[in-house]
Length: 335
Image (tube, rainbow, N blue to C red; front, side, top):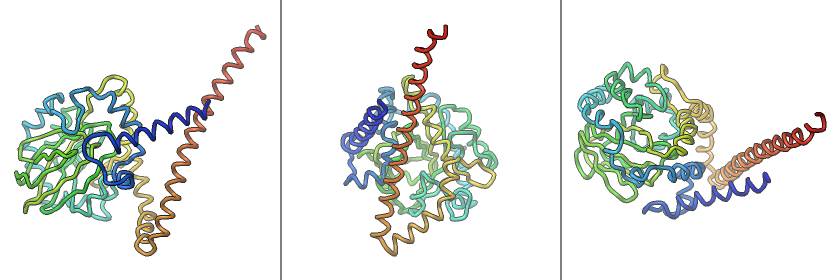
């Protein structure tokens, strides 16, 4: 029985990957290899369950923000939030969190954006507000804390002339909210979500599903500063139950701004293995074929360990069930 259940799980994983890669939305990755590198396919099975239980009005690449509870409050305070963001930007605090050696540098979810000049400062991330945010942007923290639907929030900077290539975020546990604070107010500074361009403008906001392929560009001479939030995905109750557990992964990816902030367990592990990753990058530069061979071997080993772990868990449950049946059958003989 365990073998059949494992086979069904693997078949569902393959079907989920195929759906996301080949059928979901309008924009396709050029190759399966690009999708594997840019879209975190390991999370496709759970994401697909959440897509199925998402309420109809919240489906699709770009979502009507008016449907989100109390989100108008944060929009009404955009100028106050803007002043704190600009103060952080001018003081260098926003730059500092993305610099090698800083407490906020080891960011598993957003690390690849650093080479594009992208910067961030967390207000909160699937937990209490960061202590550094309470100290450096208290009004923004106060406003965000009034909205239980906001799971995570950060200031995000896209420098003049910068671009973020096509990618998808890993977890479908939330929707992504963008509020323009200090932007070029130009169509040349925009994000393209599943083929639909949306420009950032001061005081204006929009909501989208960040697990659709998207890319961004700022083809102006002015930096773009926004407030970026993860907001609760509107879901039916089976999805909400699953999502409570799923969000613990996002919580584990919490990244500090400074040493005073909490660091999630996943981020802590990522920081510890960074020297190994750096050694891999050096190997890639010197001997690319060997690097690719080791990469595939390691990835296959990790997948194998995951499959074996699932199989072992299924066998454990099956054995426990067999033991209970034997005890129930033997009970009348002792009566």
